[in-house]
Length: 428
Image 1: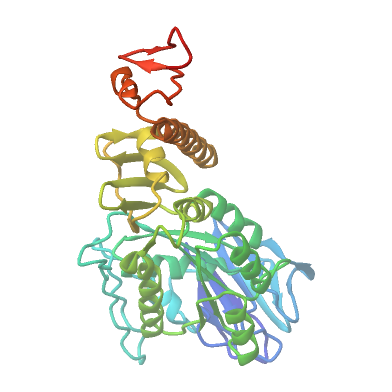
Image 2 (image 1 turned 180 degrees about the horizontal axis):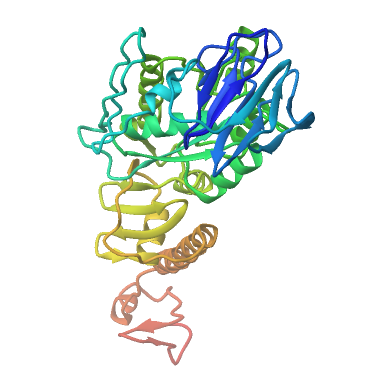
């Protein structure tokens, strides 16, 4: 299998055997291929074998990455060509399997995958045993969630994205659906396409960095939880990120135990909203505002509404209103009836599929129709009330016989015997 060999005479001979995974190269611990040399950045580049060639991606290194002395952001290294990272020269060579030096925890964690999707790697000679990664089943309200939580990881390192998403998929016992993006534009595209519950992003990225992306997501998707996870964990970045809308600021883990600890924090955060729910009184918060927030954030939930006379549900799936039921009413009639309630309580429940789909329109149109229906109903009630009040204000009719008994000073203008009649003479 091909390997990448350091050819500097001043350095101890080092080589890394290449497989089908991304390999990070850098000076710091945690890189798959660690090269401790001053001109190498802490996280310098990443490489991946593609057939007989090697794809190379620079990770914003200080001294650059060069293929045959041509500086690259992303390029291809062919067998026999040299790769220069700072002052370190490497060459892509074909070889038989050999002992690999300089392997970090990332490659070790991914060496063995069992059919049960549990990583149980063999420790390197002389290294401390790597603990097995045991799947965790998130529980919400005593039950395993009926839908997968949508989690987006944003990092310019494809090696890190590949490793971390695989491990989180195992730890979550497949209750997370993973999405990944190596740039801000790709991250925003994923957010437009999927109802993301949690975004985990790095600070250091090309063009639009993580701090800018944090601000964009906070403004556009107010219901999405955001966590910043970076190797550049300092107090300045922490304060900026937390002030910008991040729920957590975490240093990137460099050990299996660290990954498990980070996963537990992320899992608690992504399930928290669904465990707690969202409730309130209709006199304090309008249903229109709640529906607007859920649909704008493209959430999936069930809005349960009740008062003394009515109990109903509105189903919202990925920001689309799909069904409403209230008593014997379903669809638009039920939706309009629930929106017309002036008092009661509501509760946001975790989403489950409705028994049927009865609503298909845009949520803005549905809210406008409900408001129009409520206005028309109010207008009819008002007209009826005015007519009843006017009728009640009329005096009770007095029979003619009773008027005659009142004396000669009474002027009779009309009599009533089931119908009104004008008398033949105007005086008696």
